Picture 1 (cartoon, helix red, strand yellow):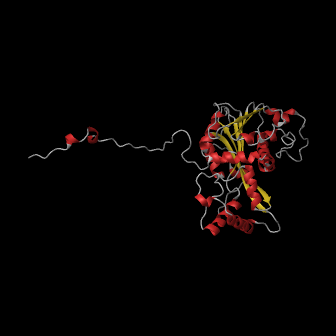
Picture 2 (picture 1 turned 90 degrees about the horizontal axis):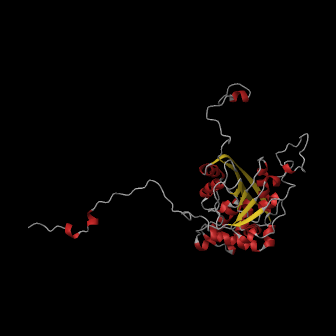
Picture 3 (picture 1 turned 45 degrees about the vertical axis):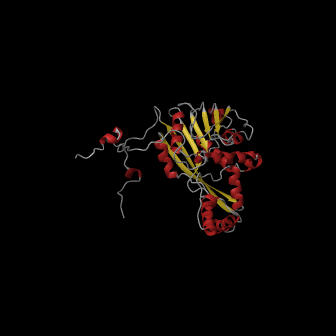
Amino acid sequence: MRPCSLRPYLPTSALRRRAPVSRSYAVQAPGAPTLEIFNQHVKYLQKERAASNAEQSRKVDYIRDEVAQRLCERLLDIQRHFPSVLDLGANSLNIARALANPDHLTLSSHPTSAPNAPSAPDVTDPSKLLTSRISHLTCAETSPTLLHRDPEPQSSIPLELQLLYSLETLPYEPNTFDAVLSSLSIHWVNDLPSLLAQINSILKPDAPFLAAMMGGDSVFELRTSLQLADLERRGGVSPHVSPMADVRDIGGLLSKAGFKLLTVDVDDMVVEYPDTFALMMDLQAMGESNAILKSAGGLARLSRDVLLANESIYRQLHGEEGKEGIPATFRIIYMIAWKEGAGQGKPLPRGSGQLDLKDVLGGGDFKVS
């Protein structure tokens, strides 16, 4: 007797051999990035709450105003006219206020001017003013309260204020702006490579991108002291200071986004505070509080015991002898990058140099010890 066959009772699809599906690369669906580090809604609420107290918010603008001033000085080095400029992440119009102050943004007051020059430039010449080289400035910000906190500065540059849903998705057409500026805003972006690629797209050919962002070891004193205080009082460590990009990664991200002629430098601003409580209150008033998406539950909340321990540890590790206050370091990363365009200067091919380095150094052979 022949055994009963199972074939008639199995569906046809089960008998077919399916070809294996393989994929050698990762694919991300459009929309919000898969890897989210910062909670954008929390950051929006922090900026809204900080700007709602306008008087206190103005008092803590010292870092943003100083960085905006230094960023505009870098724009002063570029000798060309900018019909349309975008201020991405305008905050409280810090760049617009810096541009409205002609006493600091002239060629004669720029630090690159020679101190013993035979004749100083005429500051009354309109061509020496940066405001005379910008025809229109678009200030884009995600927080309406922060954007409209102060009246528009009195300037000869026409301003246009725009609200954005997010800095990670720019609603501008390609080849729109002659320059893009950003001061202390893009360090809260989750998908920084995508944002840089979008900025490269909205720039016109051979147009510059100038930005300043907090990065590296900013407020490292507060980061280390809070970690030790958490470990001492709770037996565990929770991130209370948001992570930031390192200066060594910025050049690679700009190159990957398609930018050319990169310039990246770092400036450490050390600010003295009376105590750690004043430092954290100023960070909260700036809207720069921690906004990490995933925190360790209850450990993310700072208790009274942790705050008191942090004050003592901060002074012991980072306090300077003879000073009552405590230092806090803000590391600012400045970047200048250009969108590729026709007629743009390019580096010569490797090995095409015609000058020997020994002739530059005065001749002779190199000795290796």
